[in-house]
Image (cartoon, rainbow, N blue to C red; front, side, top):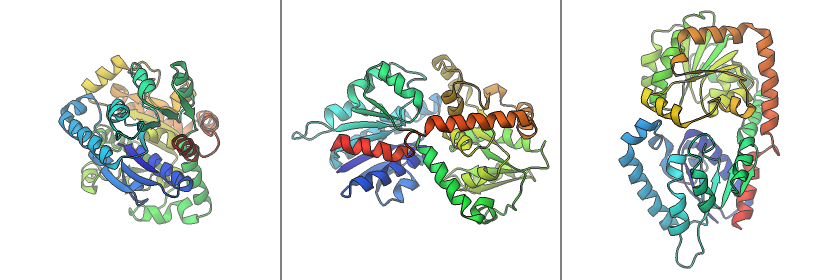
Length: 388
């Protein structure tokens, strides 16, 4: 069968690549055409567009790049028609993918076909805002596959055909931990971190400032300024794929106890005493690797004010949303200051009661997300059986 997959972000590339691996096991004749990234391309599929050319963050940036988005949509529709797939699999990326669903059901099939099957794997966060989009999903999406436990009840309430498969990051992280346990170099980080000229250290703090240049510019300087107050610790920046060393060097040059490494986020985290993490998937990865963290979020002022009016949630991090309580501290917008980070980081590093509570909460979080052990395999089976 022929599958057309659209993932417009780094996390979508990761989950898309794992889904493709599992679909190939079920469908030996599978053919894939996709929008994604390096992980999907490494599986020898046809990559149409790379996510680094697609990710526009925040309301103002989307408006500024609207002509590019419209051009990409037009190209995408024609490319789907030319490929004529059996199924369109949309992975999150709502600003783009939700613009496709109505067209895909009504226009993206040849005269002798009964209609293109539209599957959403990893739900857009319509439960956070724009709940009106649920009616669009109900009408034009054939199958919604979700990875957060509370999403199943949300969609069932609106009569959407929904399946909860567990979270794919559980297996990704467990596979890494198993590999680390059997590989001394990986476990200690000696081999990986040496590539960044970073000596092994038992006093490491991970900095995950994001995957896009505009969010890194806003958050990394504040994170780095905090490092000056912890001279006994080595702060390691996990560089984002596709962003050059020169971009990071302009921020790092003034700090003696800060270094940066590419493509080794898990290796950095597994050795760290704590982490400062931009909100998003990385907060969940950090928790599954059992690293105490502070969630750092800052958008441009206009985007933040618009989002604040539209989004009515108690928390912004996936960890807290899933657990429905404050497991990890969130420092948002004007609260993201050096003084606040310094205070919260000191707590994480010295308060044993706090450390134990976080450990207990992380264990409960993992239990909630571990449905059936392999979310990617669960999703692939649902998709394959549904299309077949």
